[in-house]
Figure 1: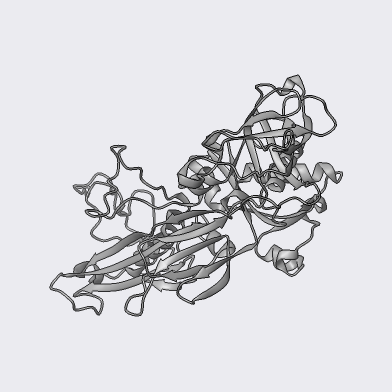
Figure 2: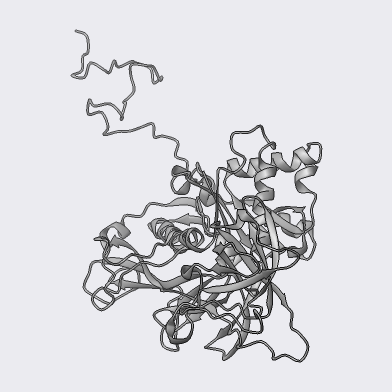
Length: 491
């Protein structure tokens, strides 16, 4: 009588040989998983399929971190030194002509009435932008020994053109630009009437509290499973359940930077996030992108759809003209996504006849003129006009799980200089990067980066919770000073 078994998948043989019909398949659904003679080959090492997954490091590269003790940080920025106005209207006349200055472009005068600060006896340049015509004129000259009388509020002035019997007809009703370039007085006359008080613009930002937590139960910590890892923070070797804690920490450190870059201030009365500080103390914080879009420069469609290198140079020169009109800071750092970085490479290569050397030959003043030091940070440099630029990829803009999936912001240009501000903690003026982080700290609590363990597992015995909880907390905000020197590249 032939030998049979209940499981049709198995056919026994007299000899102990491995055949296709006489081994137990522990992966099938027939229930033959009790023996498992042939175990799988187990790779202990974790495969790094996405490479270095962290995206932080941008702020460490261009800024600094400093403590603060208040609920907000306030700083003041200089206004322009010279006197100028736009949107002026001139009433054409022979000799003296009345120029009216838009009240929206001038500050309050005596009694909080709008008033300009151009004084009698000063000389001005008046330009008509459409025809690009300019006329130089003397402000408020006496007519038959009598000074002109201005109606209140002081938004008008009278001006007499040099070398012309009458003002050009094209100036009538046009939006004119004027600026002061000097003064002229007759012999034996009084000096200028009044003085110009310097003004400044004040900005502020508020810190936000950023939290995260990792939790594992006591039972899971007893179920040991070892995996050999090499994480982005330098941790390597065999880890057990703390592998997940390590990744939580890495993700949180990325959040610390992403919150400073992406932060938005809530607007009261919009029906969104409550900004009532007395009840919730939640109202957002102004991050890098919002600061540039609000107070800086935004360039849309760099290089356009032109051939590689063809359209980028004209766009870049227009950006340089805008930098000239702002702080003209000599050294700037470019943090770009892949497409825009290639546009810059093509632009530089096109000017130097192509080739890799065209994109790397540069001045490295920011890095003690050491090309090796700059390249260690991933920068390549070039010079255009009177400016030095250091270009590098910004991984955050390329990462498929963060900004790489949005693709509307292509990069930023950050000035590499510093500004002088008064530090209340030190009681003196110090120099700080234009871009820096302020975090809450005092003698009793440093909230730059807090981490602690609670529960009753893993060495912590703070409660009867049968778990280990690892907590993370920080309270910080970003200060973007002189944002008029920053440029954001958008799609």
